[in-house]
Length: 325
Ligand code: SAM
Image 1 (cartoon, rainbow, N blue to C red):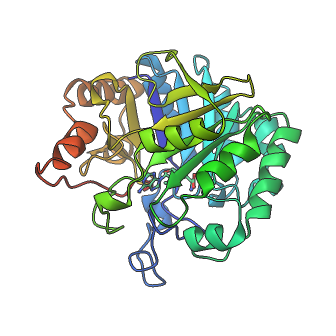
Image 2 (image 1 turned 135 degrees about the vertical axis):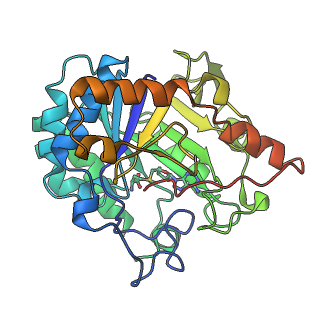
C-alpha cells in the first residue's frame, strides 16, 4: 500500500452526467448525516497508521472535497505527519479561487482539477448545474498564484458529448507546464447508465492529439503509475491517458481508498469496503488500527480493471461502488 485516497465528503455541488447524475443524486438523495462522516482527527489517525505501513502519497477527494468546511485544517494536520511525500487534492475547481491560498498555507503539495471542456455549453452539459468554466479557470490560476502549481487536469471524455475537448484542452494547456490526463469513461456501478459505446479509448485520444501535435511515449516513473505518459515532440509538455477500461492495470495497483464514512476499499471500484470507523469508534489503539489496516491490505484480491476488460469481450458484469463516496 503506497497511495491512500480519502473521500472527505460524499456531497458535491456538481451533478456530472457520468458521476453523480441528477436521476440518482436528486433533491431527495440521502447523503450521509454529519455523525456518520469521519471527523478530521479520525482521518488523521488512519493516515498515521497507513503511513506507518508504507503509504507515501495521500490524496483528498470526494464528493467535492472543497465543500467540506475548513478542509485546510485537515490539510495542515496531514502536512505535519512525517513520511508523506505527496499530499494532493482532486477538485472540480469551483471553489478553488477562494480556497487556494489557505490550502497552500496549510501545506498542500499538489492539486488536480477535473475539467471536461473549455466551452460553456459543453461544460455546463457535463456538470449539469450550469456552472461556468471561467470560474474553474480562475481557480486554476489562483492555485498557481498561491504556489501550488503546476496544476494537473483530469478530463473524462464521453463519446458524442465532449470529444472536441480533447483537442481544445490539449491545445490550451500545451506549453503551460500543466499536464492534461484523459480518463476513459468508466462504469461506476448502477448510477451512470454506462455503455461501452460511450467510451473513447485512450488509443484514439492519443492518435487524435498526435495527428495535430506529434507525440512520443514517456517511460513510466514508478511501479503502479496508472497514467501512460506522452510528450510533445516539439518540447511543449506532456499529456497522459488513463486506460482503466481498455488496458487493465490491477497487478501493479498500490492504492487504497477511504470513504467519507470510514470504509476502507482496497480497490477504487470495489463494491464492499472494510469498516474502519467501527474500529476507530470502538476505542482502538493506534496499534490496533495499524493491525486492522495491515490485515485488510494483505487480504485484498480486487481486479476491477481486469474484470472490466473481460466484460468488454462478453465476460460477467461487475458491480462497483460510486467512485466518489
Ligand atoms: N469532485 C472532485 C472532482 O471533480 O475532481 C473529486 C471527486 S471526482 C469523483 C474524482 C475524479 O473521478 C474526477 O476527475 C472525475 O472526473 C472522475 N470520475 C468520476 N466519474 C467517472 C467515470 N464514470 N469515469 C471516469 N472518471 C470518473
